[in-house]
Length: 288
Image (cartoon, rainbow, N blue to C red; front, side, top):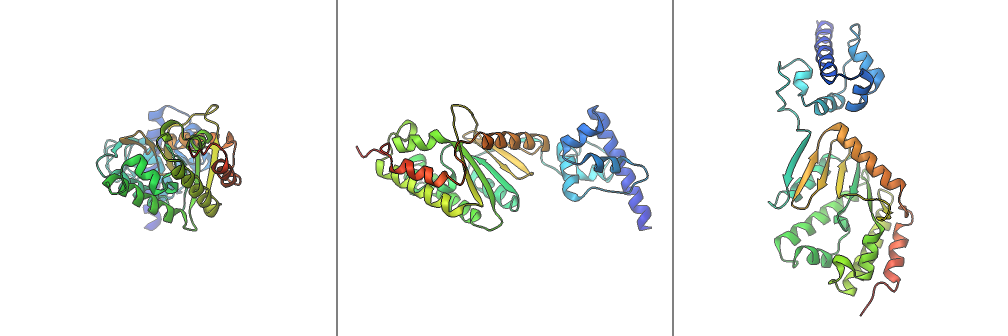
């Protein structure tokens, strides 16, 4: 009986998979690449003589990429419009309603065991000093500054876990501007700027190799601020909101963009701490 059930389940899944491929009007190989499964695995799934089924993670990837539910893929529901079981491909999450920091914490928690790829808007959250937090978000006693400080502490604790794998890419110019007190850092005191660079250098060295900082030249490359939380989601930071990407295809595109930034990096993680120390000790950190 169990064998018959498995054959029936595989047949239903095969039919639903064929519907999705036909709906896209693309070759099976292209479909497999886009949803994130091996071509050979797809061939087995489509083979009438096979009872092979995907693992839960692969099933969820197919459902997410195609905008259907896993229940529909398994033949448990009848309509492709029933997508309540998965997240939409793109969604908006507000950050100015007090929920942004909570979302970030939950996304990091869900991504434990996966690589985190992070392009910060200025200084990575977990590397900010309290003085810089107060400078960017208001006096230390304000709710926003306190929330950001708490978020930074949680991220730092998260990064110290042995299973953490985090890569950060940021422009060289961000650190140079801090050292020189230029741009948005012009009103931050020289002492606070010096402390920020010293603090960054210590943590970058301490956390390596599970935390790896890459520095690229913003004159040659550009990137908006975003984080890729393993294969599950990516979030682009747009100021007062996050553009959250749940589509496998889009997450892979952002991952490829991040890998391009790494290949173009002028300073790798083995040299990042020393480079920051050189900036901290250079004449750019003026005391005037």
